[in-house]
Image 1 (cartoon, rainbow, N blue to C red):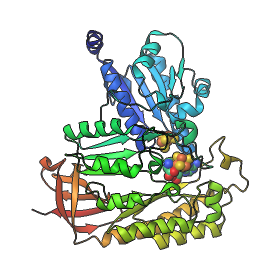
Image 2: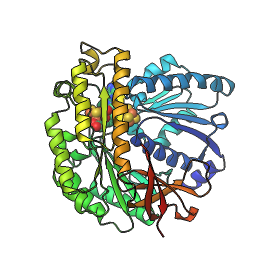
Image 3: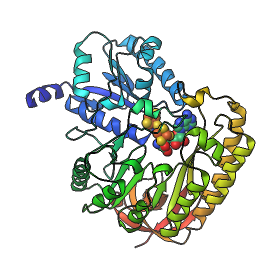
Image 4: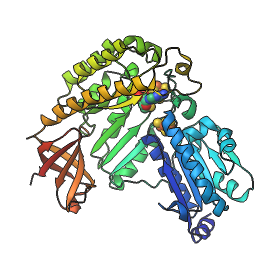
Length: 449
Ligand code: SAH
Ligand code: SF4
Ligand code: F3S
């Protein structure tokens, strides 16, 4: 095997990978690239220099799917000029669309779904030496990533998938269909991965799952998400633990204790609310109401000082009236999230919501989105303003993108971006920064010596 890998390596083939969608997809691409490197490919950012093009796709909203189809059609020219290039479509849209992709773009060679991300050697070898089109979209029954090579984009913060799939079937959402049923990864596999990361000097781990609060449900061992966090909190070297996403319906108050007492578990909870109207939450099949949501927030805030809470929210769900939307605005006024990912509801084929009456016109959705974003901006700006003068712990993750010499950027424990001047050597370190200025999205500060 080693011989085989070595001979592949001398081929120095190039792969171009473009990732759409959520952090889960970003991490999937890191596994894809890791395996491809072992197969002799190195990553290129120049699509015209590639031997293999992989688009790791998302289809949670229609606009991203359209964008991907339009990119696929642009790649047609590249394929016509160099037919030997392999064009592969993977990720959630691959699972949703399957052979439809071949129908729309017959020059695509390969389609594989997210549960095949640990199977790249077989997939690439079959495609490379075969002469037909391939679809690998079976859902594997076990979620194992142990021993799968991975090339991570960051050397400081690492994603760890603790579960995949989803069983919740919110009426608007494609994820249960694209990622399959919920599966948790075994505790020992996750702990081993975190320990390796600590040895490689990673400072932060970011646990990923569609609904981390239901972690462990399908495992033979008896373990909860809070227990997993407690175990991870004991790993030497890791300084920070983050996680996403918590579903309010499975929120367990034990988690509050772990965030409060686990010194590494960061004071940030992302808890998607989706709507402030009980009527809409019910037809979304979210299985909580606004009062239940608010009592979780109250409990979190009364136990953990300075916790930041962020959310996801949608406007223009079918049947959402101006009054329902007003309830979302009122709920936002009352809760005061640190930040919110705001979305226009997008109709996804074959979901229950797509069949519902009273779809909201696009103009109305856009107008509601604008009002909600304006409100959230005001709230985020005020919350950040209050941090001026405070000294906060910052994990420096990169040179700031703006072209100012020695400008660094990092994150507070509450996941706020802080920009300040400092030496390059501080990247990867924890430092103290005094906040001098703030705006809606960013804090600006000075390094405390
Ligand atoms: N598992 C997470 C969400 C994953 S999808 C949870 O349940 O909270 C990320 C976000 O995309 C969702 O929170 C939702 O706000 C948004 N989303 C999902 N489907 C959508 C759709 N059809 N239209 C618009 N936004 C959608
Ligand atoms: Fe989609 Fe709901 Fe599952 Fe989140 S919990 S992934 S919104 S079905
Ligand atoms: Fe993520 Fe998009 Fe799939 S949000 S789970 S890549 S549909």
